[in-house]
Length: 149
Image 1 (cartoon, rainbow, N blue to C red):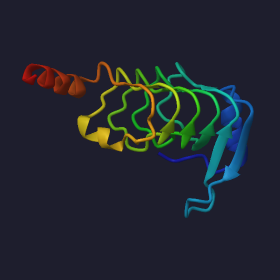
Image 2 (tube, one colour; image 1 turned 45 degrees about the horizontal axis):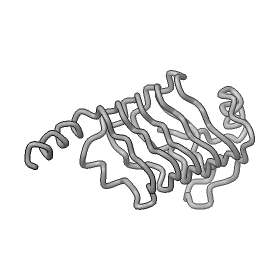
Image 3 (cartoon, rainbow, N blue to C red; image 1 turned 45 degrees about the vertical axis):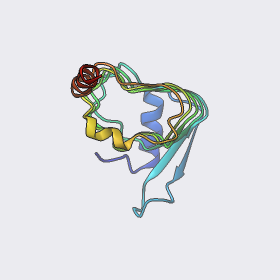
Image 4 (cartoon, helix red, strand yellow; image 1 turned 90 degrees about the vertical axis):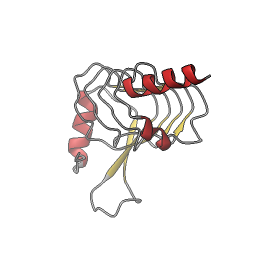
């Protein structure tokens, strides 16, 4: 995935998806010259937009972040911190690699294709409920555990 490299393109994308109250800054953590981070003082709702990728790197979201019901396959866009819920349900995500490391609300990643070996990418900072329902490989693992006990 490639992120948008031009601040005006980032603003246009944010405006196209009705994301307001944002702040764009250069990402000091990256070695690349033109990476930007978008912090949002509020909610981000880009659900049901038929998105295959999100070309923005998000930092802190003060509200919830909803990118459910799209066609996303990975989480490289994932914000660093979400002070509300994180909805990635009903996509085609196979791995939790790149997942937000600090979520204050519910983390719903149900109805995806999440592989069980990617559970290692979950952070200790996921303090609240994680919903993993209807991920085929995880369902098989849950069934094995139930039969064993």
